[in-house]
Each structure stands twice: as C-alpha cells, then as structure tokens.
Length: 86
Image (cartoon, rainbow, N blue to C red):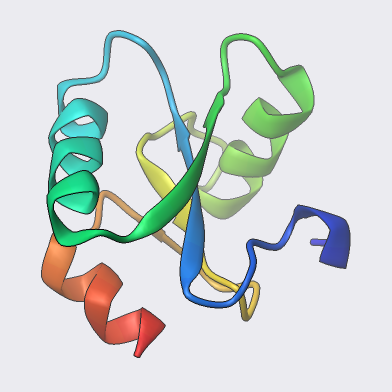
C-alpha cells in the first residue's frame, strides 16, 4: 500500500459497495461517532477492488477498512475502529 492511499491520521478509508448492508451500518455508526472516513466503491474502481482482494485472500469482502498505519480489517465494529484510531 502506498502512502497516497493511506488515510489521514484520525480517519479511515472504507472500501464498500452500494448494496452492502454492513457498509451502510458502519457508515451510520461512523457518522454518529464523528469519525472521518473516505468511502471508495470497489464497483467503480477496479484498482480498489484489487486492493480489497489482496487483503481478503482474493475475495471482494466489504467493508474493508484501512487505517493510517496501513493496516486493514474487514467488517470491523465501531469499537474496533475507535480502538485502532486511538
């Protein structure tokens, strides 16, 4: 992962799709908690889909969240995101 794709400190990048219920839930929770994020729809960005596949053993599993340190987690809870950002 290059530094250009890393989110700013205190924020995340969330790879998602429009039809993903888990993605919608996490976005609502992030909004309520005031946690900043950049959303990337993997259906619109093939390079993002490839990144998600590389993190998830070849699967396009969303939401995949990338943290400022370059680490990634799939379908995290709000608590997991908070813990990783603090």
